[in-house]
Image (cartoon, rainbow, N blue to C red; front, side, top):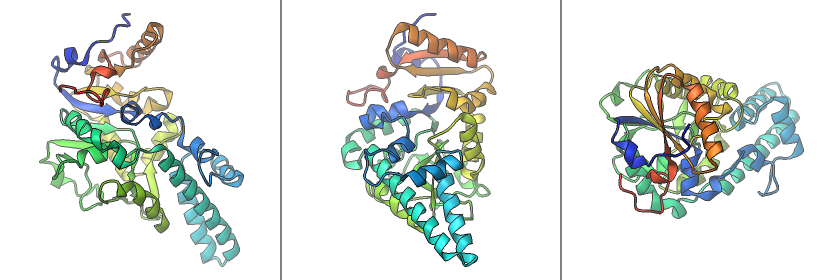
Length: 331
């Protein structure tokens, strides 16, 4: 197996690439602080003010999860039930943990996330790169792709939110649009409403959206993004949300060839591999960073084994417009 990675320019004209799957590597190319291993680990570390307390982490451990959405939703429901039963002292204690965990999450997000003012200069380049595809699928929770598509008004991508609300029974309006973006693991600007299960999209001007993320949780809304756990954990979170289920189903039924950029497709992403296995014969171009040749061959062999029916092409990530945002890249 040849560890030599092709230049993106030699691949892009070879097929009609209708889809793009974006992973954390794209965010890291734009903002180095996205080189995180775990949002949960950041939230419980002394690297932020007001980290998770030992009691807070015990709640996560008792639920066998690192998913903030699950824990915050459980605490919100528990508080409401305790108040209804007249257990005000218990309700107050639950509320304290809700506030503590919410604060740690907000501080962790702000510690990692790029401010809009610092990332503004590359957003138009990201937008230009995305325009080459009809369907963009993202597993990143950050706001970069959302900010990028909003650099042009009206946006050329639909996200299936009408007036800020996702309604799976009313999608006909979007049928005439050519380009779309789907957040397979949710994102910071998406929230789930308490008890209703509905998903809404936060709206604000530019960088204010990052600040609004924290304020929205005061109303009992829970953040809709999946950042932790095994592939089964992630799929379980997806199945609990009508929007995430819809997005995953759209990816599973993607038509055409796919470019995968900045995605490791490791064990925790097996649900994505299983979706692609259903496609059968398909051209899939996968980005890789230049590294030790043996490491490249090992990863190539793993992906070829996982996707035996697909025609896989491997290219150097830095030669793609998303991989070197500080250079002038021709598309």
